[in-house]
Structure formats: structure tokens, C-alpha cells
Image: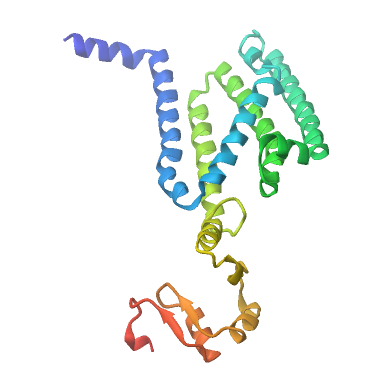
Amino acid sequence: MNYFKIKTILSKSELFRNTSILISGTVIAQLIPIMLQPILRRFYSPETFGAYSIYLSLLGIFVVISSLKYELAIVLPKKDRDAANLLFVTVCINLIFNLALLLIIVSFKNQILLFLNLSEKYALYLYFIPLGTFLFNLYQGINYFLIRKKQFFPISINKFVRRGTEGIGQISLIASSSSAGLVIDSLKKLAKESNVYDNIVFVGEKYGKDNHEYFLRSDVFVYPGAIGLSILHAMSFGLPIITTDVIEPIFF
């Protein structure tokens, strides 16, 4: 009897309903990076995770001071107009701070890299710090305004979209040959450890006629996959093919 009574009270409680929405949205949003960890750790090198940790640490520092925490006051005014003005002030302070930060990074990039003990290939990370700081504080300001309006479901959606966008961006980078510690970095590291790096040229993705020069200069074509037009392309240049046994013999 007490159980059903408590359940009835909770189901009618606005506080319980709003809290449940926020908690469920936060939990679902946090599950996205947790599920992506096995994939990301398979493709990103430890060095890249170290550089990314430095980026997150700097982001955490600048997020605290970039808007002078004006966003915390958005929920306080009695009038929505005053709250909207506070949000506007927050965005302006945030923008000015991060433009100044970007100017500092552009002017003293090499000194900052040396101070952080980062290699030149991670210089691009520095330019993402002002952008990340601005976007995160903008996100926080909007969140506080939504809290003021008791729009808890949109807040949960925002959390999910933010984490989902981060995940999509990280997975998308895996398909690229950037220097951000992805598949190509793993291969380069393996080549260096095997002392064959000087004998390998990483040319990146090549399509169509761009491949002709490489086919003409090659002695053999290795294709670690199933049926593909690349095999036929290589055969048209008279190259012997090394591939897996998953291809049906009738294909040839």
C-alpha cells in the first residue's frame, strides 16, 4: 500500500519528473563516449590521448574564467528580459575573452608548445582551445536559460546531441589520414618500430588517374579485403595480386 502511495506521489511531483528527465538525459549522453572508448583506443595512439588530455585541461581552466561565470546569474532575475540581457552579456564577454586568447596563441604558438612539451604536429590543438571554450560557455549559458524556463527535456536533448556530435566527429576522423593519431599514425609508428619507415611512403588516399603512377612503379599489389574494383584496376596494369581467401574463385 505504501509503495503505491509513494509511486502516486512521485508520479505527480514536478520535481521528481524534471529530475528524472535530467538524469536520464545525462546518463544516455554519457553512455555515448563510454561505448566509443574501445573503438577510439584502438585507433588513437597514447601520444594523441596525452595531447588531448592537455587540451581538455586547458579547456577546463579557460571555461571557468572566459565568461566570468555570468551565466550562473541567468536564473536569478524575475523578468525574462533581464535574463536574456544577462545571456547576451555572457556571450559578449565570452567572445571577447576567446578572441584575445586566440590572438595570444597566434602570437606565441611556438613558446606555448614548448612550455606544454607538445610537438609541432599538435599545434592545431591550440587553435581549438578558444573555439572549444567559446562553444562550451555558450552551451552553458543556453542551458541556464532553459533551466530558468523549466525546459528540462530540451536540456536532455542538448546533452545527447552534444555527446553524439562529439562521437560522430571522432569516428569521422578515423576514416581520415590526419596527424591526429588515427590509423595512419599507428602504421607509421609500427613502421618506425620495425626500422622500415625509410622504405615506406605514406601517400594517403588516391583515386582514379592519381593511382596510375603508383601502379606503374609497383611490383605487386596487396589488397587485404574482399572483392573490389581496385583489384581489377591493378590487374589491368599486369600486377600480381596478394589478397585474402574470402574472394570467390569464380570471380577470377
